[in-house]
Length: 136
Image (tube, rainbow, N blue to C red):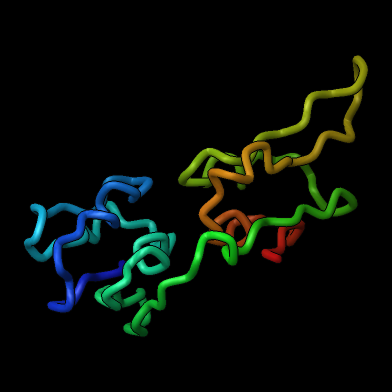
């Protein structure tokens, strides 16, 4: 299931300009639409929409949230296996695996390299097979 845009949409284009997977289309001052085949349910559109025109994948209206309040992933180094599942699934490519400190180092972990780009979608936490990521 994907997010969808209601008739409350004013066509401001903020959601379409910021969608990390380019799932939103529409003309300025015209209602926009979300392609359900492209939408990854990251929720960025709902966090940005000032008109309450976004409904999440459960049918719940999304609420605008200031960027300063978006949650960020926290990685537990004791649990992280550096498997790269979070890195591969991050729609904004904010995560990476740490570099080995020396030849043969096996204590690498996932890192939030560009926190300013993180949209707090939680996909990394949802997909982590060992539960090493939480949003704070």
